[in-house]
Image (cartoon, rainbow, N blue to C red; front, side):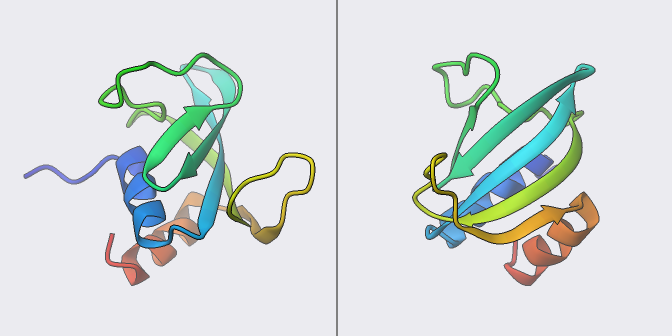
Length: 100
């Protein structure tokens, strides 16, 4: 079985931590995007999100720039940050500690 893509791993993390929201800043096909991930679902804040949940919002080739962890539910007007500006390497440590 192939390893999970970063986007699927992040979705799985939020299933294991339903009280947290991830705000991912990434370059996708050379364009900046912000993706919110909550309770196993991803949605772009910049581009239209496909209706089909099997279409990855964060493709495997995305270049993840930073990840913020917020307390859910996400409120853009009053975000409650738990951690900000995590690198992919830092997030990997959290994913591995969470068993994802």
